[in-house]
Structures are given as structure tokens and as C-alpha cells.
Image 1: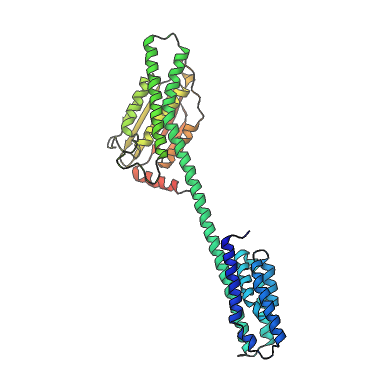
Image 2 (image 1 turned 45 degrees about the vertical axis):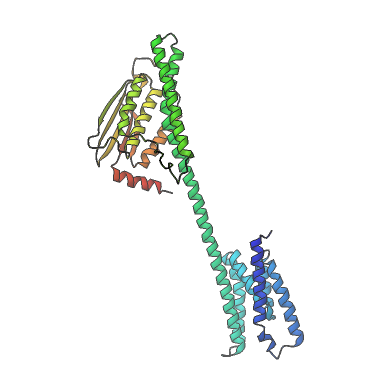
Length: 393
């Protein structure tokens, strides 16, 4: 089915073939060797050839070959032949276009061999015809390459959009995990403690219930903030007068550790970040997420084990974060409550976050402890590394 644009193109080429044949008809009428019957046959063939332009989309190569061969005897087919050759060059591969173009070249060479006289009018007409054919084929190849370039750019833009959507989904997944895993693990641990120790003192039950209520409230609040960011237009950013959502910094790591202590964990914290601003947003957010993921994993997989958190850094030299906990099998104390299941996505997302910051993530067992260690470079190197990772295909 032709579209409206296709019909406009077909009608335009049909009119071109008609007008071209009429404009160049003087050579036929001025030739005294052409009889009246031959002129009428030429006109009829020209009309049929111009009408055949509407078949160029279905049989472009066959139509071009027929018009080229018939054009040897009928002048009025020249315009239709040019239109057919243009169509072949646009819609077919170059090796296919070479066949009808080669037929024209052979005709031209044969004509020159038979009529070698220089300055002959027939030779000039043949040269003009060959030049027109070359122009039609060349223009068709240009249009084809132009369309191929546009299609390639559109495909590249489509793949870039898909890659952007994939990266956005991964970023959302990381944020959702980092924001909710900590709160929900606190809630799960205390709910499990209430389930397995229903005979606990009233004060302990009241404290655990308060932690559950506060963790659920904080989880809902942080989830609402993440959803608000997702609903906001990406290009517009926050509305005028509306503050941006606060991001965690180095100053919030101590509060995170204290919160875990209040939940019943044994956490030791050592910080040595002299010269690094406590509110720095560069490495602060990544450091906070590393500590958050390490403490959450220790709470889920090694409940009751002591956890140590160390943050060390200097301006321009980067920051090193280490979260370590004793393995459950290496301590005599029994676990308090059931272990919280995990899917292993936290370390994957954390590795992606650290890679975007230009850092290096290490984790594994060392001397009876599970150690999570992250090394982050200075601000300039981190920015350059983040740009390099973002630009990878």
C-alpha cells in the first residue's frame, strides 16, 4: 500500500518523465529521416513508458532494463528511463544498480565504436544521454546513502535511549535497595526477636516495638522521597522554591552507626578524615552507602557478631572504608533470632556505585572475619573515572 508521500513521489516522477520527453522532443521532429508512423509509435511508447513509472516500486530493476533496451529505438522513453534508474539506485544495493548502469555503458561504447566521427550531432546526443544517466544514478546513490545515514543515526539514538533507560533502572534499583534494605532489616530483626522471645521483659518489648514503628515510618518516608524523585520531570529538576532531597554525607555515617547500636548491634566506629569536609557530597554519599550496606549485611547474615567500621581519608588522596564482622561460626554466642534472607543484589549494586565513583571494591573472608573494603580516589580522579564509566558503550 502506497502512502500519501509515495503517491506524491510517483506523480512527481511521472510528470518529470512527461515534461522531459516533451522538452527534448525537438530532436525527433527535426530529424527528417523519421517517418510519421515512427513518430506516432515513439509517442505511444513514450506514453506507456511514462505510465510505467507507477510500477517502479514493484519491479524497479526489470522496468529499468526494459526501458533502457527500448530507449535505443524510442526517444520519448528517456525521462521514464532516468526515473527508473533513479529508483533502482535508491532502493537496491549498489551491485544490483551496477547491472542496468552497465547496460547503458555498453550501449554507449557500442555507439561510439559505430560512430567515431568527432563533432557528430548523434555523438553529442549520446554523450548527453550518458551524462543524464550518470546523474540519475549518482543522485539515487546519494539519496540512498543519505537515508542509510539517517537510519543509522536513528538506530543509534534508539539504542542510546534504551541504554539510558537501562542505566536509569539500575540507578533506581540501587537507590531502592540502599534506602529500604537498612530499614527493613532493622524491622525484620526486631520483629523476629519478638516472635522468638515472647517472654521478654515489658521494657524490652516496648523498646523493640518502638524500633519497629520508627523503622517502618522511616522506610515509608524514604520510599516516598524516592518515588517523588521518580515522578519529578528529569529535565526540570525540583520545582522552584522546593528544596532538593538531602543526600547522605560523611557527617551522617556516625548517626548511621549510632542507629545500629540502638538496634542492639555491637558496632565499633573509627573515623580519620582530617581535612575532608564533613558535608562533602563527592565521596560522602558513597561512603555512607558502603557503611550502610556493610552493617545491613552483618545484621542479616551474622546477627549478634561484633562489627567494626573504619573510615580513613585525606584531601586529594581519596577515602578508604572498611566494614568487618566476625563470622557466625567463629563465636560461641548463639544467634539472636532468625537470619534475614538476602539475594546478593546489595554487593552487586554497591560494586556498580563504587565503579561509577572510580573506586575499587573488595570483599571476602580474612582471619575469621568477613571484610568489605572500598577504596575511593580523590575528587578529580573520581570525576574522570565516573565520566569514563558513563561513556562506555
